[in-house]
Length: 509
Image 1 (cartoon, rainbow, N blue to C red):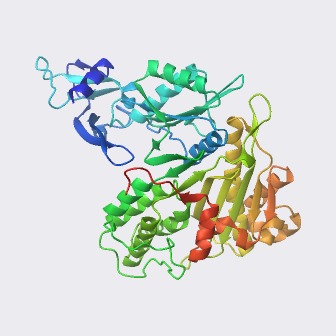
Image 2: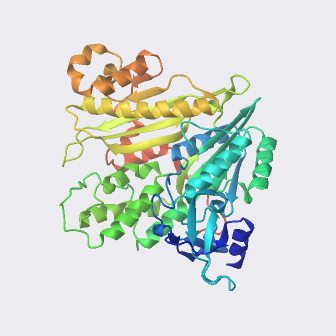
Image 3: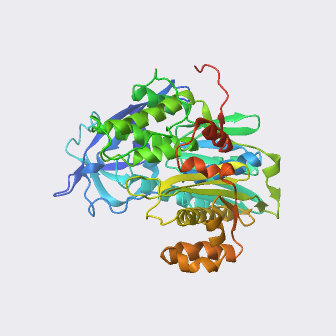
């Protein structure tokens, strides 16, 4: 606590002033945490002074609060490029990050419990820097960091504001920011080291060395490849759910299991259901194989039943038996980036799009899904119920294509900012009607009600920015995102999603 308070004073976080009449004074408290390493061992004890931001008043001591965080697809894209090109991945942690943000509003706070100035016990703290717990703290820190990176020559990405790019005379450096956790990589190790040293002179930056643990995701290097694993996180979720001794199953959802709103009595602990399902959503960051099952159980968060809870337990049982699996990023020579000019490279994008027509028995909406690969590495995927009812399988497949194209356009913009030149992406669809529809205006009369999607996809195809091709259903990878599958089919597609066993580390059980 004394160490934390010393850091606050050294940073000039506040100054003591006499109480101001009718001013809103925010309370504060001490919060204690145990920091653990990837193996679950305690690495250090942490005390943090936190303002009670719920005492703040809108328009009085805070205004805008939104602060961006890096998108998972952006993280996976940068990791794929780094692994493919054998670039080093470094990890930084900014100590007391929120304390570096400059406050634009006037905020008053009570003195910290246990550390009230004996000479000025009635005084209050006027905050000059942001503090953990304040509503605008994340925004203030991100603004300060953004300004510092721009002064170092970085430019903020337009496709993902939490990605910063330095592209100068053949030198490429990428920085990914998730609050106070930072990933940095580039094609010249010395340039990366120089950036870290310059950041250390501006902030209390701790160089954690090679990327190994980020946002609860373990990064395992194995034979020049990289595996993202959430083994520890998954086992913690299973333990909290009370299923540590459960019997594993081969798939996350049974093919015969149909979930309906009122299919059984209401579950007696809906909060527990929501907590576990919310935790499972985070597990999909490195486990695309559970995306469909998690999407399905998320549809009943408002009123879960016993049957829905059984479906959640099946997902946990599946994860219990496959906790060692992770997402592989392969350094495959066939997909390695080749020099295109001084600062541009080339790599292909392949996308798979599929839909399960009228799969929901309640509202007859279809479930669409896609998988996007950069070279051989999976960087983006989704399993999502469509917003409207489709009148045919071709229509539902075409809407799924439109959603995939929107993701491809975003990814192409991201890659261009990263200095990557790609040929027109290839999108594979297993519906001939939808494939023809993307390029043939003869079908226009039958698609009046899907006019927007129709023009959106056809325009991309006509301009040569997209190739839509037919693929046999048996080869359709996105099939795993649209429906429950048999164990044999599921395991085949899981392998194509680059979900592989991670190597066991020393001291693990």
